[in-house]
Image (tube, rainbow, N blue to C red; front, side):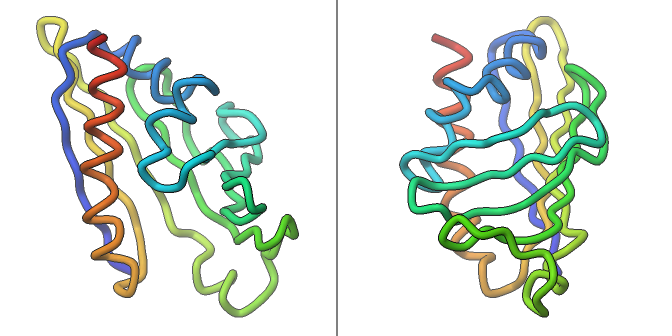
Length: 145
């Protein structure tokens, strides 16, 4: 696994960035950069299961490893969803298990720096290096509107 790093500066308080990023309606908007119709089922509460998916029933099974509101959230991926079926037992799923997405929010004078650290396989690196800047641009636009 390789950890990718992305950062954006958003002209909004971190509480607004946090809620815009995680609230269902706006989550669907900014994550459309990854897949149109992206959504989640579950809770952002620490320890909770959360499933991220697309309209075709594909995505990731995860758990919220850590949640410090308006400061930090860590998502631990535990498997995949394919055609609506969760897979946490196959070799591919086990290879992916433990991958993290960490989001750090730092505010100075009403401006928030959002840092994203994401574990991924080398084969997906270029895809995420293309998608994440678009997603963060959309998130920034939603927060600053």
